[in-house]
Image (cartoon, rainbow, N blue to C red; front, top):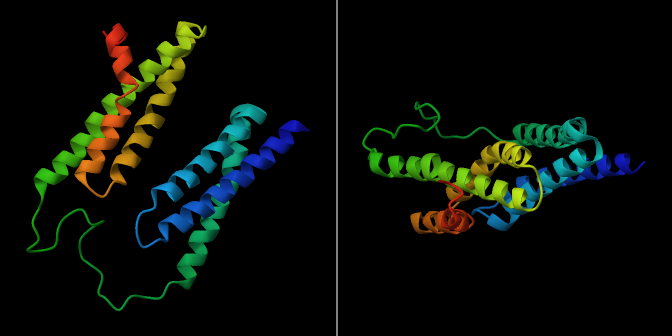
Length: 192
């Protein structure tokens, strides 16, 4: 009975999270609080599913947000009017139009911040988490296995937050703040 209530709560949290994200992405400017709220609701829904019935529960609670997102996208697609502007001939906006600067340096810096530095920080945070869990009494093998599973999620969260920043200064601040959990681990030598 309690498992059914958690599954229902997880499905509802995921659906509300999709709605909040849709509202956030419909704003004229980026809204970090709305984005975080939407993703937190979806994460909470997945956690409810996991607590209720493990991987099966997480799969069940992911179906409702996916169906809700599909419905919202379908409605938006039906309501949208064709643009009067001619579509660009470039693929996925990867290359600049003729005459626009390539901005290779800025693109490489973004890749270095998101692809390399955020990944290194995610590994450091995962190791810090493993050390914390091992110190709390979890077996070392289980602590490192959990850290290994969480590293891509941590990396995705860092990359998302960095890419949502409107300026390089904001991106550097996010990366600096993200590095805070790694410093105590480096101080005690857990990464060496």
